[in-house]
Structures are given as C-alpha cells and as structure tokens.
Length: 202
Image (cartoon, rainbow, N blue to C red; front, top):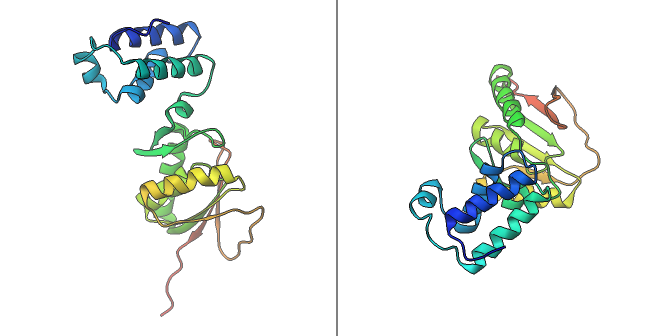
C-alpha cells in the first residue's frame, strides 16, 4: 500500500477498503480510525486534507484498517467508546456498551425516582458503564461484581476515569437479604438488583 498519501487520500483508501470488506459503516469507521491516528477532527481533515500523512501514522492507520477489514470490532481498535455521554475504555474481554443499554439506564433512572431506589448491585459489570452512569446521573450507591479479572481491570480503569465511589468485588456467589427490587431486562445479559430507600425511624 502506497504510504506517500495525503490525509484525504488515506481516508478515501480507508472507506474503499472497508466497503470492499463488507463492513457496515465504512465511512464512519475509516473516519474514526483516522482520527485516532492523527487526532484530527472532521473540520481539520477538511482544511488540512492535502497534508501528507507521515510514515508512522500511515503505517498505524493501514494496520487499523486491516484489523477492521478482518472483522475486529471498531470499538476494540479505538480502545474507547462513548456511553451516556461518557468515555469508557473497552477491549477484548468485555462487551461493548450499546445504545440499547443506554435505554436500560434511562429506565432505571426513571424507576429509581418513582420507587425511591437508593443503591444497587450490577452482576457481570464488564466495563462498569451501568453502575458508573447510575452513580453519576442518579446519585445511587452502586456495587459492581464480575468474575473476570480482565473485566474488573476495565471497570476499575473506567471507575477512576469518571470518579464515582463504588466498590468492585470478584465473586462467584453473593448473599443478599431484606427488601430488594429485581429488574430483569432482555436488552442485554445483565441482572441488576436494587434496594429501596427506607423511611428513617422517628
């Protein structure tokens, strides 16, 4: 692959390569991968499109295109994906945060307000995107659990990025007692358990 190309030429090459490989969104994928390599946003790519991409950046972009063409998820190549307006680190070993799961979080936030839910447990937390967003957006005390050390590493990293104060446990079983509200969803393979606020005794 000819390395001596401008930014615009590389972008065109990326789109064509991913389209030929049958990727669903070749234009978006090519643009995001080029942005990861160059740090250039859409306006910069338009105004500086005739700039020659340096050899190192060209090699990196070509490698990313090859990975994506072979079917590696875009989010894993980027290493980060946005969820509820927050950036989350992702990679092999965790599920990629999805738009469907954002709907789940919105439903939980609405339910939490109506049912006075104050805290919750996320079993199989993965990236930690659900408890982190519930802490930040719903002021809930969340505990996140995952049996996978790799998943917990991602969850810890994301926890430190966003700074809510929730606890991570590695566990195969949990004992819960007292009044709980179970929320099941078919949107993603996650079970969430919440505890209602109790009135303070006078």
